[in-house]
Each structure stands twice: as C-alpha cells, then as structure tokens.
Image (tube, rainbow, N blue to C red; front, side):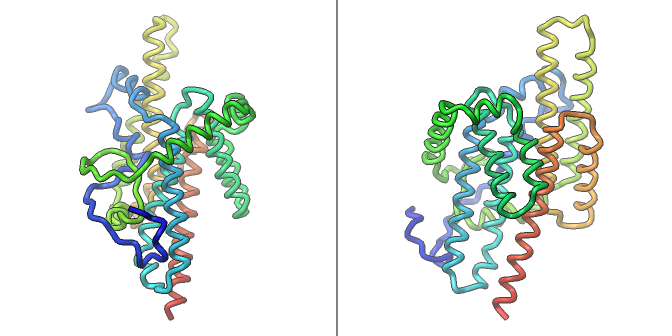
Amino acid sequence: MDTNTKSSLADVKEEAWNVSIVDELDAIARERPWGDGDAESYSLIIGKLPSLIDVAARARYHAGQVERFLDLAGRTQDHALIQCRLPWILALTMLNHAATLAVALLPARDTIDDWIRGNAGESIIETSQRHQTPATAELARAAFGLGTPAVNAALESPRAFIAGADRLLAVTNALAPSREVEDGGTRVHWLERGSTLADYVADHLDLEYRLDSVRHHLRWADRFAAELEDGELSQAHRDRLGRAQAGATILALADLARIGLWPARDPGDHRVKLQARELMRARQGPDRHKAIVELAFVIGGQMQAGLGALTARLSEAKI
C-alpha cells in the first residue's frame, strides 16, 4: 500500500488484521521461565533476547508512523475524526517508547550496539532539551549509558557511526507490516491497522500481576547474587549464576518499565504504579537500571499529559 498518497486522516483506510500487538517490553517479559524458574532456566534468558539493532529499527519505524499521523492530522478538517483516531497515535507512541526503553535495557554485544544505544539516548536528550525538561535528559543520559567508556568510545568512533547508522537505516527500510496471522511476536504496525492499535491501548493491563512478576524475578536475582558470594564455586557454575542473575534482572526491569509506561486506568493501577516506582527507588542496584525504570515512569506521565492536552484542544475546537 502506498502510504505517501494520503492527504488527510480521512483517506487512511483500515485493513482487517485481528492479531494482538506485542510491544518490545512485553516480548522480553514473555521469555520468563516456566514455573518458578531456577538458575539453569534464567541463565538461558540472555540468549533468547532480540538483537538491539532490530529493536531500535522497530522504534524508528513506529516513530515514523507517529510523524505520519501528525502530518495527516494537520491536514484534516474534521476534528471529531482526529479525536476518534487519537488511540492510534497513542498506540504508536507507546510502541516507539517501549522499543526505545528496550534499547536501553538489552545487553550490547559489540561496538555497533553501543553506538545504537548511545544514539537513542542522545535523541531523547535532544527532544528533552527542545521541550525544556532537563530532568528527563539527565535520566536518559544515565539510562543509555552516556558517559560510560564503551558508549562514549562508540559515539566518538567514525567507524562505529558509519556502520551503525548504515545498518540501522537498512534494517528500518526493510521493515513492513506483516500480514501473517500468527500471534505472539513483535512486528511493526502502521496507521492502516487502526482498529488493532486502538485495541492495544484499550487493553486493561494487569499491573498487579506485572508487579508480582517483578518481585518474583528480583527474588531470584538476589538469590543468584548471594550464591555468587561463595568463593568455592567453579568458574562454570559462577558463569551460569552470573547469566542467571542478568536474565532475572532484565525480566524484572522489562516488567517495571512496562508498568511505568502503561496508563493507569483506575485507583488500583495508580497504587500499583506507585508501589513499583518506590520498589525500584529503594532497591540497591546499578544507577543505570534505576534510571531506565524512572525514565519509563516519566515518559508514561508525559505521554498521558500530552494526550490530555491534545484531547482538550480538539474538544475546544469543536465548540
């Protein structure tokens, strides 16, 4: 479908596609071990995670769809239609943010990954500076490792810049919404999938379940960390415990970030979000992990505030 020929939102025709959307944070969380888990099952998590560049490309694709919505909305006379389709841009914005937070969360495997992560962080900082939100910029700097030797070296390397930018552009340009009906995987979505996008944001995510999952993973992460204190461990056992601790931590952070990003729909949701935020603030751990989670809550709040302001302006315009 040629998306460049549309002149307004009224020209966007929805296509039938009845498969639920899986965002990047949810995809990571779904890698949780069956049952209670153990060191062996948690140690396998790292090997199941998506590549950082693929996730970054999907983030960029959805950002492009957000820009497309705004461009079409700017040429749409029917304000009621814009308001009716606001869930589309909310869904695409959430998909973009979920993927961007996943870029901060996923392990970097090489210098190109370090460049991808640093570049994503710099983009958030630039946006924060335009909107005069310096606190968000500071969180992004910590969450994406800006200032760390690995990320700094990658950002300063012409070779990493050329290779990273070229690969990211190539992967992004190769993306297209799939028409496969298999459920359960991450993929990209466009405006023509409006009903599915609306269903995604209408879903009442069980935040209480997510928080229980966070606590479960963190208990295992703490248990693995305690076992690593044993000086009698073999190197193989130590390596496995290290991978298990990393796997449990990533699963917990993915759930925490999704709680932060997801809108609260009732007082119970607000309570859970507060508990989740305080849980991470009180926890001993790397500052970067805390910054990722806090950034998710800040972005989630900004997103809802922006949607509320836009809805109010559209309502006033109809009067």
